[in-house]
Image (cartoon, rainbow, N blue to C red; front, side):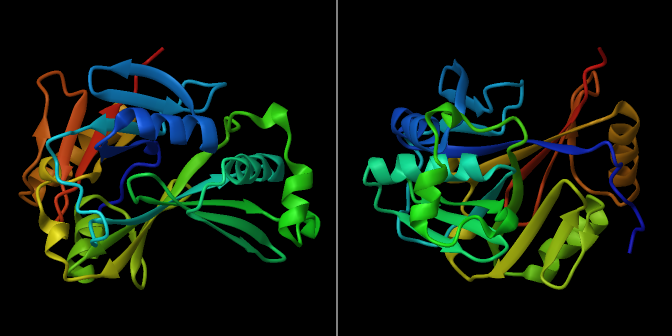
Length: 269
């Protein structure tokens, strides 16, 4: 084991998904989920929370990529944590009003969860603490929904990525020994930032190059200059292939199933 730990300045910035129909996906994530469309650049749509500069989701239109709908790909699902019952209730109400079919609701004494399949078959899990057990039935969710919660709150964050892989141990070793995440039973974690769950699958679509298939493309972190340079030195020491630009503002590395991980130096104000 390397003993390397990714610096604690590292925070998850963006998850990028290759899509076939960008306009349809923008409409889903904006009008139903509640992200704001921050910017459009050529084939890229940048989505985030309205009241701050966060860019949680990038939708990259790739019309030549194959969709492979109905087949197992790299991304099993990804989870977004909401801090407000009003927020998750308002998402629920928008989906019900639109008669959106691909929705499952799970209510427990501690948590409310919406399992949603987006228009291009990415599975999105929205979760929120069921504070004081306010929600017992779906009708309780409807009662908590408001028009004011049209957009997701600034505290909204991607909390978990769940990947399919032919070799869980190989992926764990990559995240633990190469990137410095904490290793768990069948997952890895960057505490207070991101959990990565790993599922075994032998689907040949998992190893299809990212530019040839729809679904997850790359994941971006922001970190301090000190932590970026420490990561680079660690990668050199273990002879891991990586890319870093001449100004040393962005470092990228591929994991064993072909997902690209970006580490960008934070801008000093």
